[in-house]
Image (cartoon, rainbow over the protein chains, first blue to last red):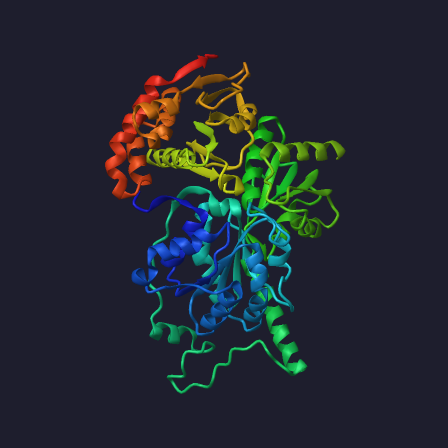
Length: 361
Length: 184
């Protein structure tokens, strides 16, 4: 039982970052994710692993610190909540353009603007469709348990370094704030300078100790012809990611005649809806995207034309539902049910929405 | 066994920490647990509530619309949560500050004079443990030895000298709880 703890999602993520051997965290507090930096500071990770934890003067400063440190081959991360992520977007686009690995965590709250501090999933478009400018993609992971908040940190860095691409953990205020039982991962040490040079000397600014050619980190390219070649390279990389890293969970889909699609906290609520629905004789299933980009379109498409209907349950006005519709391709009716502004749909509400949809089918 | 509980009252009454101690005790009992607080502006000078689930199975939704037990510590929470108790479930409340007592006839109802008992013990801080004792008497979902371990895990070690006093408060709650409407 040594490493079983009752932790908030934010705390589990922070502890997992120390244990993943992260070199640096740069951030700026904002509800509902301030426990990330609070926990890191209280842990004095500079004594545990030598990890740097720094409260920057703003979100913009924090993301640019991430840009610089990532360019040096370091394992770096930042976290924020919705309005703070909007501030970081310029830096995120630069990092994507310069092809650097890093982790960005968004614990979403209601918007637009400063909105509310309660849970939301209204940054789906921002996370998976761009957000910043230019043709780029983030790999986006959607945890739905406190355990996944912990497990996805190491997973994110593995993906980030494998593809030299920024990864986002897209959580919401409920997962950040709630406590669940969590099994903490084993701790691994940070890379030494020598190990870092051995692994990343081909692209990182490690100091040219071996007389190699200069590594230049930039997202600027004034020649259109060259920029287009870079764009094509990026697109080829994104295609590889789509082919290899798409992940989802199918719950009770095998005999379902109606399927819910939901991620994060909404996916937890839908699991309760399955339970109470099945007690009433309704054959409900759930597809839970684990990667929001790349999107599990093929998994959803498998059931298109076979079930009576789909419902996309989200804490927003209907964002992911567009990707569900693209996957279903008109073969089956798809509706959206959602609450906004920090309100969370209860299992009872979702079940009613499903029952009402079924009446029309 | 799955027990879905809402604990609701004023900020400062120890609502969130009572939930945390219950959840930690559940872990010590080998159960799955979740603790979902209200963390909005209402917490900053108003009502606070936390939904706690203890279960032998994987917990699906931490967000619920009905509960096996509601523990209600002020009138606002009574107004909000009386209707959310499942038929045949339990509503436990402290009559202190309740101007409109519950009227449902299809649930079990119990009272505990938590504020008064805490005052008699000359320690307002153990109020929440008196309430928790009252609850555990009616729904013994966790063994006392695991409550002890839960207290050890929840309280920072510098406060471990306060554990016997907390356990005494739990005993008081167990003794003084009053089941005023019993369907069983």
